[in-house]
View 1 (cartoon, rainbow, N blue to C red):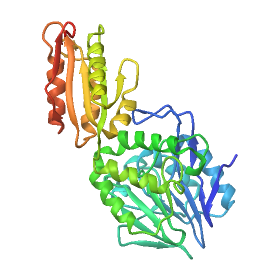
View 2: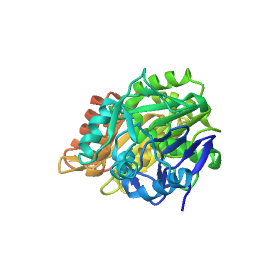
View 3: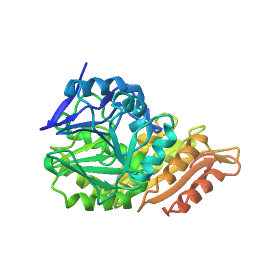
Length: 375
């Protein structure tokens, strides 16, 4: 059954919903996700992006509901990651005369992923366009947002930007437009998405936002989540804050795991200390909550406090994984503190402190307690 949706005259959302997806790139997706693709019907028919192979049937049903047996002439590949591209082999079989357009890096990636597929590929860059009749597509390279092949596509005739993974969210509950979800749901999902996927690329996102500001755009169509119209301004404002590393000096995030409760007591001590000085504090116990939820929360926190018991002269595995994940996201303008209880040597606290310091955090003195925190 088709769930294609006309967004503007001749432009359709034909991508797939995956409402039961629980995790994407190690981050929880409680609302599932979408693999968005868009069909633009002009003198020529153009498909923008593919879908994940597991949802191929949805894409084909949606395409056929719009154009029936008409062929696809062009396929624009904004990104080659398999969640976007793994349906390519079947799509080029169904539409063998379609010409593909994308970056040079996309061409290399697709050739490596799908060596048995045959298609014509046209490399495009910032000065290239594709005219399909009334409409002309403009290509905007956005290298490392978040892969080297990434680009977005601008359609001035409809004031639409197909933004690839920028400005996306993991919302796969059946809505196509941001006006069909609450602002709280939209921004919460976008914050988690940015923190867990896009955070390391703030410089590149800032550059992209500068380019987009010069365009006449009233609708942004990302590769995941709902299309942005009603809340486009709020999303651009939030991305501007996140990309520049702006943080809230009154927000504190505490993340810990504890063997016998002593490090947990320290986490609550730190919570009370910061709340007493009028900070908003969120505490995550990694034994009970997924690390990606904590990462989404700390996106705007100035203070990041991480605690672990010491086990076999190291951090607990849950904390070690979290610290490695967090440092890899390269958060900017953060103040860190390591804490933990130990029985014999306490190496975990030093390990946390050193890892955060090496990751660019401004560090407070670590807080150690042997056996239990004392007055």
